[in-house]
Image (cartoon, rainbow, N blue to C red; front, top):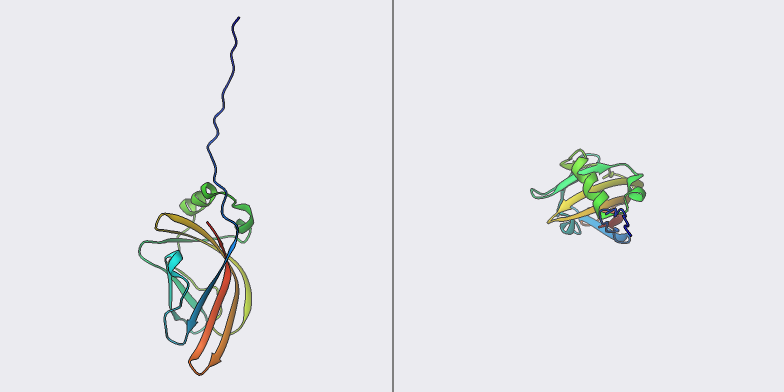
Length: 140
């Protein structure tokens, strides 16, 4: 008796983590806090917007809002970063007024890929100058 069968091997996939909150805060002229994990820095603003910049070792790409939901595995995120258009800075958040956002960035830093959803910017003026807080979520 002879039998034959076909074995199909599919590439393994690794689900992204659950969404976790991040907070980036810049007070007056000081460098912002909370960005180191992603290989990003925020040390200046333009007249109208916060300037979130990549460091030398980080790849940053801008994705579509739908990618936040549609990219569900580390492999798909890696592909999106590999095929995305690299940007050196993100200027989507106002330095002048509170607003909500649905901007999606992806970064590769120290061998880890992150997808970031920028959701809110809060601008307050006080004794130490202007404080800007950017809040959102990330998955990796």
